Length: 235
Image 1: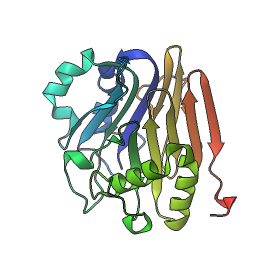
Image 2: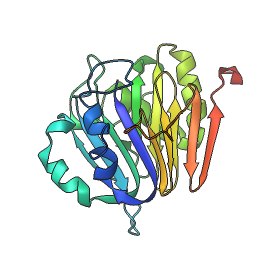
Image 3: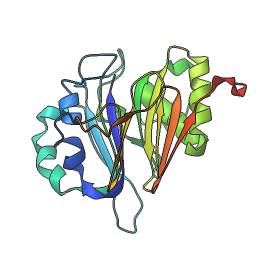
């Protein structure tokens, strides 16, 4: 349920990441190839990015409509350029609202964050900072409140409390790109101009690599670090 993508590297157009690839997020909104839960992602989309201007505030464009039918975004995306992007298409959890505020990426003003999965809201702390009552927004607020430096520990705790949770996270702040694989697919592409992390490959490039389940990925500049998310930490 849901597909997402993160980019960190040289400035590129949003269209080149989301719309142009043969199996990009636009195609994944109606025909994902590796999605384990759900058949489509027609319940909204969102793109967040950072500019190279002195203002570090992340910018977002979100909609509760399917990505494949948004002609306005299609016309503007080729001229939107960024060195750091988080984008997602949504398949809403049953019973959750269909609205722009329930669509990733969520933000605390510094980070952009997307959740691909499902979680029982009862295991999450209440937060006044949640953008929506949907499970992904409540989870995002809990992660923001604790801090992204503790992302791995937070995912272990939530996953241990809710064994049925799927907790694939994509998060970026302009200089760091983080992602977790917990219950769903995650792949990485190391390009000459940067790094793509995605729920599934957006093309058939043989350089795509699958990230093992229960792992955290951190990208900072030229460095990529994989860390196993081990439930034996005492949580």
